[in-house]
Length: 456
Image (tube, rainbow, N blue to C red; front, top):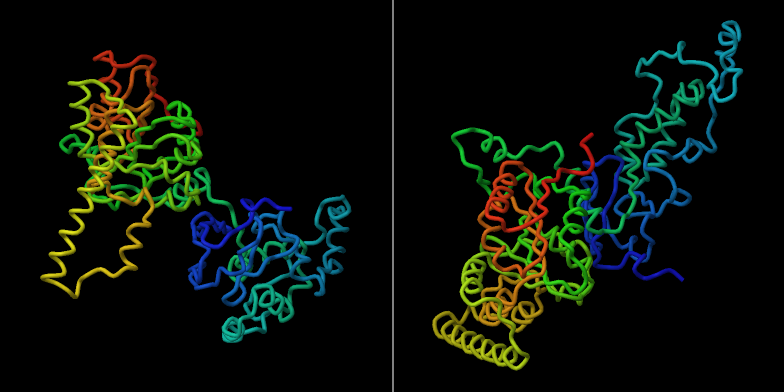
């Protein structure tokens, strides 16, 4: 019996791997989703094991048999042309035999295409006919088989020429895709591959002597700052993150680092996910299909809470609250939150009765996931301040902004002998952080590492 975690479930995020990296995408198995520039139903994915190859047929996804171990473009000729004419080498065997018989050796394709002239008249199937077949919901395999039947030169081509022609037509008509399970490594690979050829203008401006290093926009094309899976693995390894840790994470890469930390901790410990701006943008956390107990370890922290907490720790030291104090603080925060909610509802009902939120909206707000809250209500703020003043056992910083100012405040929130990791896609901010730490003797064993895998 298959493990339920190895089967695709409704509501899961999956990676649709195509024949090229640009077309690879991440979708949610729910209703209709856009794949290959067309809306298709994801109902056929439910219950299938990860790694299965599917084909777009009309608006449905159909499982392709006997291709689980094959690559997207490694489908044999027999899959399309099992009942069609095979290549003939009668016309070319005489030429090959007269030149010494190169086709006599095993593994060498006999014949050649010297007598083939591409005059664009060998195909009897017109583009309008192909459009009608597509509109009728014909599969890519059916279209290619009709192209083969209506080709006057198919039988005269060598086996190598047939495979080359099939791969070209397969990219156009047969949309094969492999469904891969979403995890920190695969999601990181997708983001890096789709943004590999994009250049952030902030990096160009930062190279100018008169321009300070700063990211000018929150919609940077390189959404994960070039964070590759091998670098992400290095960060988690050097940070000493494990189940039961109290990790302080400043994430500016769509929640990739926060999700990877929660994925490793498996519901044990605490992840203080600091963010900049008004709301956290941890989109990748949802894509990892984490369990409810895995998400409960995430506590969002507004960035403006870091400096006051650091000042408090410098003045009074780390504060560990007893369970009685925690219960009392939570009760006070809940009372303040309830009073504020009632006051806001009364004002809204008195002045704008048409804007009163219904029960469904209120329930949806209460059921929001932990990593989606802004952390600025009474109850989360009290919890955030208590967690920050208790100290963290490891620190991970990955942001498109200059990390030095964040590192200066977060170092005060680390308990002694705690590891920390700083990631930046540019070397100048890392050098500034390195000098700050070494000159003030704030840490020992501070290596300056690059990516493990060299770019290709």
